[in-house]
Image (tube, rainbow, N blue to C red; front, top):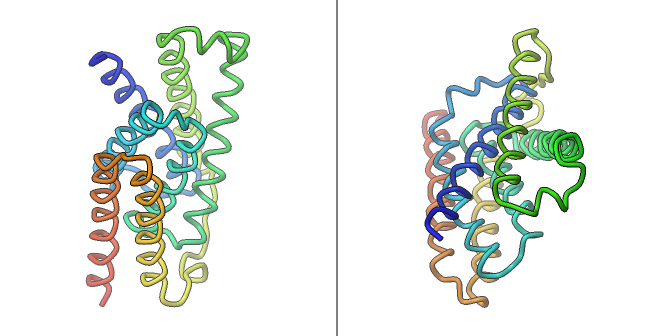
Length: 208
């Protein structure tokens, strides 16, 4: 059981960091400057994801939570405009999923074969991370990627909007978990939301 949790956390972290790297390179942001906050959020997200999958058997909701968490992270910590953080996260996730789907058939032939053992799943996650990081490192080095006029994309009162989104996300997910008696899992979302709110308000004070 302990090894299963450790394996899930480690390889999910590898996968999560690869997704973070993809999005940052795709939109020409410097990934090194936010790597530690990204690691913290990814680890918290993976831990709650493990609990949701095993306690609620809700595998379908986990990717949606991950997408929302990444949107809030890029808006609060990386300081992308909210609109860009949505575009970046969704497009990055789609590209990541496409690469992983291609590797499923290249390496295993079918998704069923992947699900036959944990080692196959770990191999897929590792292979996806390697392909994504290598590919987008090369694209970034060649100066490829998307750039935007960030000021034009920012909404009026964006910090207020972002704060409201974080609080709404926390309340919504907490209600779901509370009714499923997953009070321990709510703690992780509170920590994550507090972390994102801290970065959001900190940057607002610096800009004042």
